[in-house]
Image 1 (cartoon, rainbow, N blue to C red):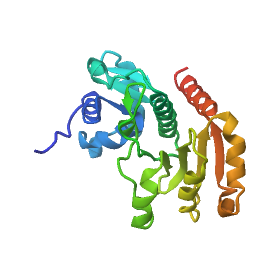
Image 2 (tube, one colour; image 1 turned 90 degrees about the vertical axis):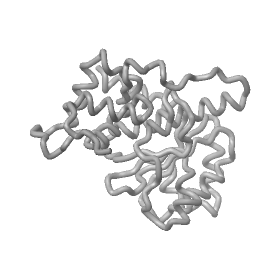
Image 3 (cartoon, helix red, strand yellow; image 1 turned 180 degrees about the vertical axis):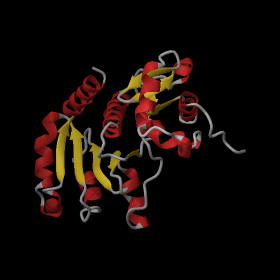
Image 4 (spheres, rainbow, N blue to C red; image 1 turned 135 degrees about the vertical axis):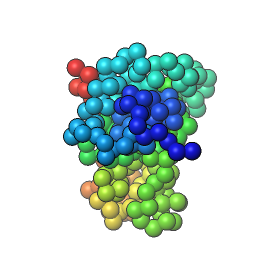
Length: 244
């Protein structure tokens, strides 16, 4: 069935959201709206600004639910519900999902980031599934297939640049010794990629000790440590700047 590509901006935005679980980040709307509108017929030079204007002003139709993330107001009740954690494992998973969700939304808000990806697509952050927050469902084939399938696709969060190469890769390390993350990072040592482990502030010393081992020396200038608090602060700062 041929899709209607003559829809208004608002109607086309709604179609993108309907096909993405009733919400979508702006970066995904920018990419997918042209499935429902003929770009050749667009006279304005700044369609992205028009899209922003539509989702921000039409509050009856669209509701902001995150950093550059909007949902269909009439379907807010259909967004995934967060179940209160019952065990310590549930709490760890909830924190993991929260940090990953923030990292995806931060990436989507940055000009130098073209696409975002996560392996944990079904996890939920603030009533949003991570897979629907990310702009990619699969990893671009930027290197050998075995490296993509055995390593890259399992990273927590990846920011890709405009050439579809990994700009920055994040692993959220709640309680492990960081070695598994470093082993995966080493697989991509030949790329101009920044690697980042995110954890509690009191685990930075452990991170530094592991990184200093001979096996991981190649990562010394490419690997960073960030705390959960830093990610949350960056997220809240980005929101405050965007919606002043």
